[in-house]
Length: 327
Ligand SMILES: Cc1cc2nc3c(=O)[nH]c(=O)nc-3n(C[C@H](O)[C@H](O)[C@H](O)COP(=O)(O)O)c2cc1C
Image (cartoon, rainbow, N blue to C red; front, side, top):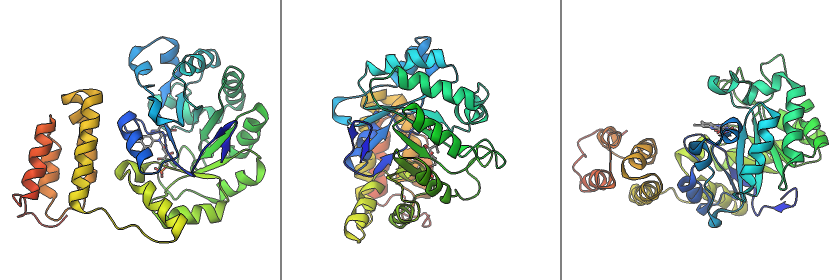
């Protein structure tokens, strides 16, 4: 599919995930078949203020194209600076966040709060599009709450302003992650705009992905939580979509090999202590469902080094934790 002048060879994308879609995780998702990955959202205000911590989040390597950098913010003039700064890192597209429900973001009128102020939405999108040499996309929810379904209006406005693609997570801000996402709204958006529509929301299995493509006609699917718990999901969905058959699940040993590789990548990137701490949640996800794994998972929440992680998995594989019940 094409997003502006960018051709993407595949239809499954890794969602922007704060605290998760850092470089090591993106590289894994790409290896398992994500055709386009997004950075964690970065604050346009922080980039405008030259905050190093935020700028360091835009750490793109040559082996991870195509990649989208996601920005959030509510000040068009800051967005202009941020878009220009981000371009120096040579991403393939810039995505604007019009959907984040998190209090810290909406309090400053960013994320989903922009859906309450369409003039601001227009100004932000125009500021980004007019100052970017690469495609600008948006990612949005349906509106602030059930009474304000503005996604069609925003979608049409986006297309008019030159936005190159739209991701829709069809829940309102007030629904947060409750209720099921209403995929028929993705269908509606697809009917109304001529630019690519990326469907998002509760795709957790190969069947879900197939159903979303069939029901909505979306051009691509973006996967968030299911990928964060298992980055290999892209290969399983691609296999099913291409051949109609299921790939076998990873064995516990294969999951451990992947968890160790992921840990090494995180430690290389973020340092031994930080990287290990950041891995704790992933280690818990990788080991979910392990026979007798409850004790292992408790221990994995305390790791501070690669040595700790290896020792715990070695112990598990040698049967030292086997007194636990299956979990
Ligand atoms: C931990 C976490 C972090 C997220 N961070 C972002 C983000 O930085 N930018 C964004 O647009 N959405 C973010 N989201 C929302 C996801 O990108 C996605 O839209 C949402 O989870 C629905 O997709 P899913 O059902 O596949 O998870 C985040 C979601 C989670 C669970």
